[in-house]
Image (cartoon, rainbow, N blue to C red; front, side, top):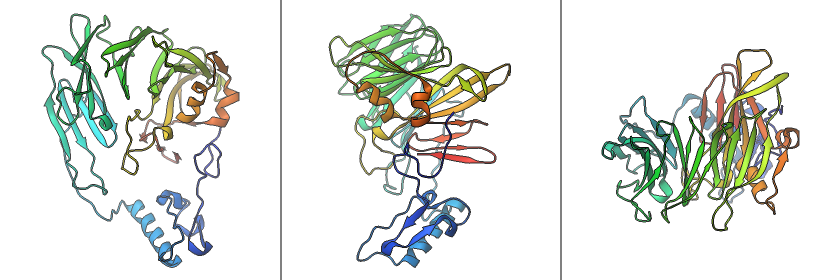
Length: 394
């Protein structure tokens, strides 16, 4: 099992900063900052040389003040906004600075305010009724960069309905080829996961016979409807044409699939990355695995809060093991950069490649023990907190 290091690490996009460089070459080491947290925890403040740059003493003072502000949650400017939400939401999403939740047939969405745009409207929708007759609203997904929200409804007739609307008005989306897509679904009582990746919507029932429906919402047709074996546990889009599946068969694995560009579209299994078979010093059986990551954004906006490049996303695989004769579950969080997973889809040819854990895991992932479930994430940077320690993965 790989270890986690705070100092320079080739897996990171940039080395961890243990000092900050100021004009003139002056350095502030971690010993100059209260406690062992280094300046990168203050926002990785770096002053570039400039004729009007602040003197080093001023820069140091600003650094220490910012560190103290973080410690005391003492913001330079603050504003308080309140909104009503349902404590037991059926589903919820945080995408591109928009938080939304669905409670039966009611839909609430807020735009999280930021210092960059404090005048932005707060509420998009407050308990808007998005019911569709007697049908049950079971899931939604959204991409604010496309002004798109998708609602999935089920009925007693074993038919599912998919509706694409504008997030800003809840009116039919002008780019949707059809206002309502209906498709047979005999498993209407299942829990559904749903994701949007540009022009493709994926629907993945998770608590019954596993099935993946891929729908091109701009053309109005289902491009693929495939069934998987029961050991497939989770699904996630890396790009509109590449997705990953998490398998709990044997010691578990990460499967990478490519859709390709040929018609008709046929998913191709291009790689299987095996998960460790030995965890905590004993033979491990993977009981369950979930995938957490940011949704793919069709049009991320450079420089805007909450908007970052899709290539910077982390994939978190939350693993639940049963080890040896121990009746207790062991929980781990496995972090992998999405850009590493995409390298397998970019390789020529469609021959399936199976990669043992020792050949990829220690070099390209970080696996941390989870002692209690408490994770705050936007999946570009993830903080996991325990009673006695904390880790940050960037």
